[in-house]
Image (cartoon, helix red, strand yellow):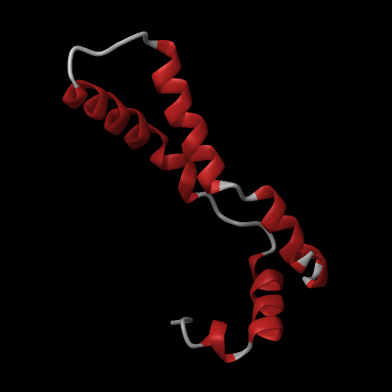
Length: 85
């Protein structure tokens, strides 16, 4: 498995940061709580409003970011550091 070669902190954030899973869970929650919508547009509006409300939780700070950043720089070198501002 490719993740086993990563450092401890980097591996931890890979396993615990599931942004896509969180997004999918929110979409499933919205679509399961209501049986139907009058139109496709009303479904999209409801999904948009729900995801807009969840947007705050996606901007949380990452613990031990300095350590993770150092591990990424050591692992990927120039491929990672060229995107740092």
